[in-house]
Length: 305
Image 1 (cartoon, rainbow, N blue to C red):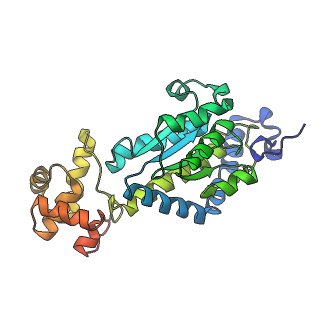
Image 2 (image 1 turned 30 degrees about the vertical axis):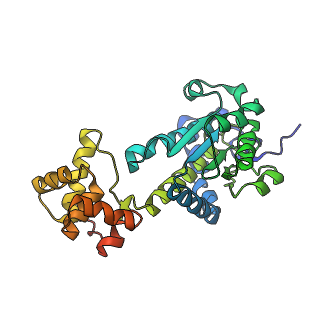
């Protein structure tokens, strides 16, 4: 029987890929991948809505949860795990939940997505509340575990959303606050949603968290100013950002960062406003963490190479 899900359809353009040369395989996959950004662009308004909900959630002290199975779950965990080092967020602020738990990150737990009761249970285990935002990720749009998680989150009053690459059931779409459904078409290898669907999903998740973090003031222009300097590379980046933004030497940047308790944002406000760390922190709190609401300046120009 034919499966009506987009992600399960056969792709006529790759029907003979088993006889293709390595270069032909590369060209076929590349040709299919080119359409992914266009599919994501069709969901621009919905993704913007998700950014708005995420920002509101964070400002209210709530959390963003991604819930998925298989590739979808791994992508949610990946996006969540990259927020702390990139934006200096606490680990609990954005969390990824995958069917089958941590073992499913490195070894497929294919049956886990069908255990409906676990989807609702995991929401309760994470004490999801009305201040939170739960986004289900299901490439096919029909994963039982994900649907159960979304429905339980909605019962608890949380905001909900779904990311899918095949139209989910209409009743589910009508229940969520935002549905992001980039239709990328059938995969190069039928049903292998780690390919185009996975790429589209990663693009959407990147936009949601990055957009929300920008709105929270985690950047100054396009500079990453709320990072956690947890290794030598990030320590160097912190110093270079302060040097570039404030027009100071490396030694002056180091001194500013020490006085700012290693906070790039605080250091910038201290230097530009000529204030103490305590005053800089107060100004940031009053202005939603957005530096340019305090300094009213333009970010430095991008240096020519």
